[in-house]
Length: 604
Image: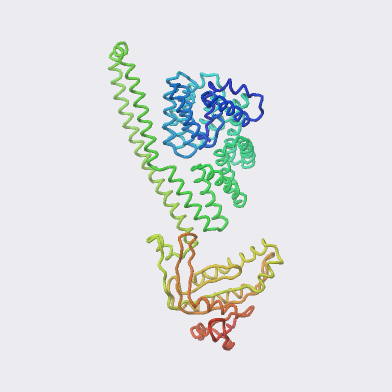
């Protein structure tokens, strides 16, 4: 939550008097609208009014629009305090959008003008915003430096709200590092400060982070209660960035309980808000959650689609170029700071003092070099550990992606797709196709609850999947109550017809067995035919391995011309399997658009 540090806390010097003019209002949004009306009524020249209503703005696009107007007017009049405020607001607009390097550029500029203005409160706030940005980019070393500077300054000021915000952010950093006891102490201290000054939005963030801490400590019930209370408050302020983050966390709580159905609406709502407002971090996190949820709900296609989107947005936020730009920005800033210090040290008195301490500094320099060498060695070792850990994570994610793909496509087809980016159609001179169909399915669907119907179909088709795997067949697809599979592909085999007949016998035996409570007892007919087919995948989305050709149509006709409880095979299939299976000749039957065919009932 630190990336939502309440930036308006640092501008109270400019808007306190103005805010008091609408203090009678019970709604903070009404207060913001009132100040906005005063600004436009003033001819858009009063920067105090502009700063005052902008501090309540959480929409990134609106914040950027007004921030640029604010900065232009402040630069025109050379007002250091307003220039600092405008840079902070623009920085937050980019931060909300996930552009951390651009945000840091404006935050460092804000600090420069805060120092020129002499405002300790503004300097303290600027240090905290910079620290938050480094923390979000996982640069804990720089984050710690700027947090320390910010809190040291703010503890000297009387603005308890700004201090509470800084303490909250430090507590959030401890939470991220897994130091729960320290995080709890900091967050509770911030919460007391926010209650004292009646800062409801700050209390909302504290509730949310306390909920996270309770969750990490295993208290899921209290965690849900705290986070839901935080979301309820944040909705009043239209703070969608924080709401999206907390919704993701709530979804994860249910996911850890194994309750995928309850986790799904929270993740979907988070993704909707994040997509609407361009919040890349939350889009990435919500898609990762949805990938896990859909996988738990056996929806492999949606799981794979969500996981791809997670990778896409994760890489756009955490790319190497952005990290390098942030490092360069800090270097440029600190070089300018050091140059300013050197200019001050040019005075004669300072030079004389430095000469007196030269020997001591030389000794310190040697010690510092030794320390740096030691740190370099430690850093190299940690980098080695980090690279090994990263390789392991990448390998795990690759394996997970491969597993999702294999749930959709045969292994040979998936391998071809990964190598060439497409799959050529393959012709098989001989394959055996099987169709099943349940008797009176449409009538029964109108008489029983949809949930029971789906549960029953799922029961049968899962058992069919086991049988198909047993005989090395390929499941092609299900269409309503019809199940379609084939033998002899994607790898050609000599006994595919025998394997399909064995599978058909076990499927029919399964149908005739007594069923568990709540499972509908269906009657089923089966049709089988052997002949040439073409197989492959088409399109670029929602891939499905499918087969085409006259053989498929004839197999379907074998099924439609069969009877309940019977396995109807074509004369072509019969000639292949007749020496191993007993069949009953049923005569020559005319089938639509395919002429007259010999048909046999398989005796089971």
